[in-house]
Length: 521
Ligand SMILES: C[S@@+](CC[C@H](N)C(=O)[O-])C[C@H]1O[C@@H](n2cnc3c(N)ncnc32)[C@H](O)[C@@H]1O
Ligand code: SF4
Ligand code: SF4
Image (tube, rainbow, N blue to C red; front, side, top):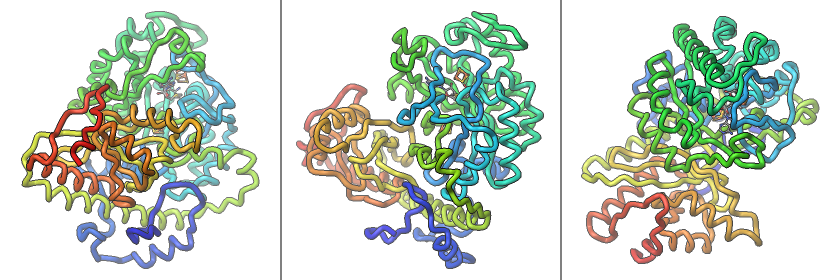
């Protein structure tokens, strides 16, 4: 329970959950026909459904990757049962034994399907809001079909409430669509970086298909044909498809608008344009040739330009192939094979359901609070749009200390409300003593296009440095809902602009308006 707000915090942070206490709270809440804290939510209604048809909403409502709103509340896990790959991408090097690094293709240990099934039960009993099991490597799930489908078979039997997902490069997809449908996998991700083989030849040095290695444009043509065919086959069967595209500046960045149109016309549900991660020490072709990734601002501009066409995913954390927990947190170290083997696993469907009912109640309160606050913006005319950063560890709350934040979530504020537009990973600032200053500079650089940063708490020194950089450190909404608080703050901001108390200015990509807020105080 948070002392300041009296609100029970679910979901975020580590540690096992006391399921007996949860059952007790759910029993108290059951049959509530009463209204939630905001006076608007009612039991059982789906928070955040918006315009989605009910059958789609049922599939995405507790999937942290397919619903941005759900990612504050529900967790996912990956099991690393698929080591081999049937193609090579110039940005990928599947390196093992790299526990501290969070990027795709990295895992600490590979698992057999049996170990994976045990791990899923262990995580499901410890993290009751873990609703999704994905296989995303470290290689390609469909280049390892026996291990992938054996894992699904075991989990479908032992943990039937968990949604199954897989993430593939698509080369082998058309051969496995029926099996995928047979296991009730209703979420599939395909990585599609191009629909033009000339561009593909710059990304893929080879593909291996039917015992033959293809290179150059021929390889890329084969790959794009199979990817698009696989996508059509899945969507025809009603399977929800997300398309991942890696944005590689100067190679496929402009072209991704065309990819967006191609996948939309074939029924993809969601497009996830992700930044290239590239560093020489990763040992990839792009890392070694100095190919850069996009800036956060370049990524946002591309996502914005595609958004009119279809749903864009902006909250992807480019997880490890053995990630566990809420997006943005990594609890994989708690579930190593050694630890799992010693764990007493108590997978209890009823307790999981009860916990998730609590989560749903919290979501409804959050959505209702946002809606209520939004209505108060209605009378204010302004075309100002600005970004704010938020430190959170989950549950849709401002509940992270500035110094502990490993990432900031970024919201765009306008008179239409608060819209999540991305996140910024930063070096951990609070390392104590030596090195703090450099890290603070990193944080400021990461959020320098934001007008304010919302935190649960912040020390005096970083507060002053942020003010000097023109970023308002806001700690007055500690443990309150993010969107509601952001709208409240924005309303005050607009009022001050309208009365001439402060002057609004655009924060450019590189611009840090020194002292702007100090001057305004
Ligand atoms: C590791 S892959 C595993 C699944 C499958 N092999 C695939 O490529 O779709 C998961 C996702 O990470 C992406 N990925 C891998 N390395 C990356 C990098 N260096 N930068 C950005 N995305 C990367 C892939 O493109 C893919 O979308
Ligand atoms: S398809 Fe996936 S696993 Fe294979 S090389 Fe590309 S990113 Fe790596
Ligand atoms: S890599 Fe992106 S889509 Fe996959 S589990 Fe992580 S957040 Fe979800």
